[in-house]
Image 1 (cartoon, rainbow, N blue to C red):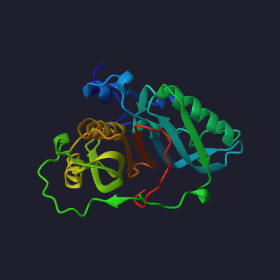
Image 2 (cartoon, rainbow, N blue to C red; image 1 turned 60 degrees about the vertical axis):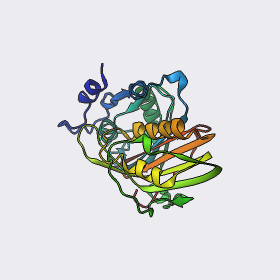
Image 3 (tube, rainbow, N blue to C red; image 1 turned 45 degrees about the horizontal axis):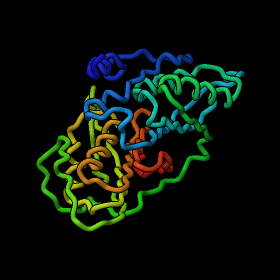
Image 4 (cartoon, rainbow, N blue to C red; image 1 turned 90 degrees about the vertical axis):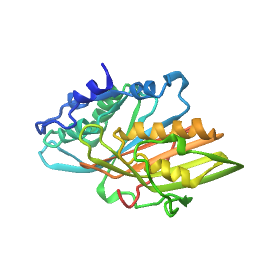
Length: 274
């Protein structure tokens, strides 16, 4: 099945019945390699490892006496899994816990791990915590490139804007100006993007123009970050590279993909827009 057909069959952009009884069949997987093949890359040749960190702010279920429990949850879906999980189906799945009884928080966690791992076709880690334990806001370290006074003429991905100088450098850059769109509904997805690398110095104005060039691009969060990683990796040829996007939440979920040439481990850094 082609990517367009796969997305068209997903819950995105369609009227859906609200289900408040536990139903793992609501989860809708989308193969990761669809995007990789469009970039001309096979799974065995991927230049990155990484993780997609999902944060749920509307997690609830009933205890055995019918009393609601409310929690926050963190989900880590690793980039070597077969599938991404379509976001609306994830929300519908979590909502299906709302009027379902469970014996304990441990049982809920076990169900989440089992169901999400099956949908992702790979390992998924789950953490559940009380709202009083919510993490404080943080911020990216490094240099914000947003103040460069650049003229923008391209609003679809333009990797040719990425260039380097001759000097070797190790630095951390970030921008609050990443915006892409849902590939089905066209709704905007806003994010802060962090890039750390070691190698030839990347031209900051060109990098900023490149980030902004995603402004009218329709794609999933995970695919945007993977494409950004691969474009920088191919055109700038750094010795090491990390790309981390913190997306603004929608419908009680935020998605935060991290791709790296070196490590799949990254802090779940909650930013002020989240």
